[in-house]
Amino acid sequence: MFQGVARLVLALALFALAAVPARGQSLSGSSASLDRQNRVAHENDFTYIDTVSRLRSFAEQGWLIGVEPDADFVLHAVSFPYARPEVALFINRLAPQYRAACGEQLVVTSLTRPISRQPANASDRSVHPTGMAVDFRYSGNRGCRAWLERVLVSLEGAGVLEATRERNPAHYHVALFPARYAAYVEQLTEDSDLSQGAPYVVQPGDSLWRIAQAHDTTVDALRRTNGLRGNQIYRGQILDIPVGG
Image (cartoon, rainbow, N blue to C red; front, side):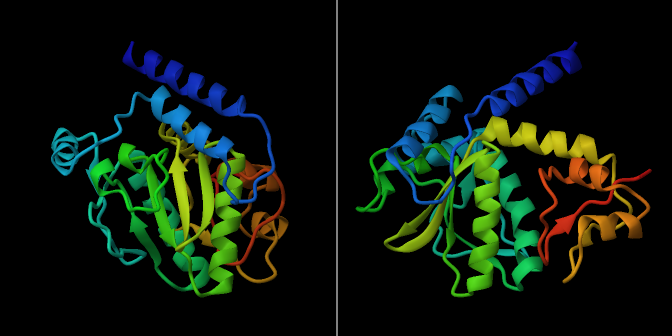
């Protein structure tokens, strides 16, 4: 029965994801974007944590989990290294791809912030106090910025997050939609059916057709396994190779 309920929850989450209206993505931010972020927070019944002691209580209860840096990402001036579990999953999936693509660590500059510790320039509609947001440093490497922006725009188009390129100070603000992102990752995992050894890192001159031919699979299988909507891939991207062609 539990599996049946879990599948129903997943199906509903995927239905909600599919129902997100298409729109142009530019990372420019808007009042409508803030509306979406806050609506998702309320849909998930997320508390806007007001104090440091309450944040620590949420961590003790397991509603927030610790985010531990590793070889692929670092925390810079993060006062409270805690986030919703799905945000931690998002960082742990994104960071190794970012490092492989541009050769530097991803830098996380902010996670959960209680309302009492919000900076003076923060919006009073910020979702950082809910634990569903993460900020990334604006890299000095143009290639790294271009890669990260492509990925964020793609995921925003998939309806699993809202991303904004902030100007003062320069950074990327990401509000993750936890249930939708978890369903998105679960679908990718189910479609992949396992991978053959290590994931494949896209090389200069690669195409989906060439990769499919080299690994005895098909372009359609590569698209399904990696959640690709078209044929565009880029240097440093990590692809899972499906088993069985």
